[in-house]
Image 1 (cartoon, helix red, strand yellow):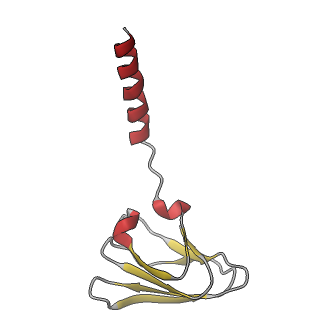
Image 2: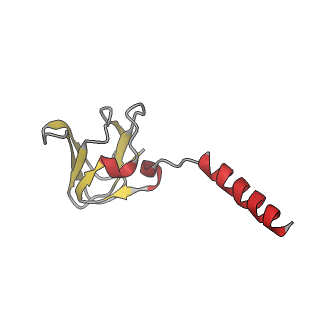
Image 3: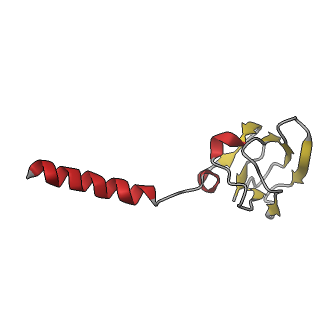
Amino acid sequence: MMKKLTTLLISIILLFNIFIVVPVFAVTNFKEGLYQLINFNVSPDNTYSIQNISSTDGVYVIILDENQRTLQSLRLSASSEKYNLIPLKPSYRILIIGNGEVVIL
């Protein structure tokens, strides 16, 4: 009886965890560095925007394809508004230069 109850409880927990998907960009702030999007569950079907949330420092953001060609570049001032990004693919990279901090939504 106890084994059946434990199995049922574990099954229920796993079932509900399958349907709860939190995009990594929704919870991640990015600082200066080079990021490979394959590590962040990027969906080519989603549209993303970027915003500098630093109140004092600006940043420069460059999106590169798999051949290191620049696809988009943005200069975001401190506390910038949101800007739309090109459709992102897992093979792309994002380069962030500056002391600011950006969030991708």
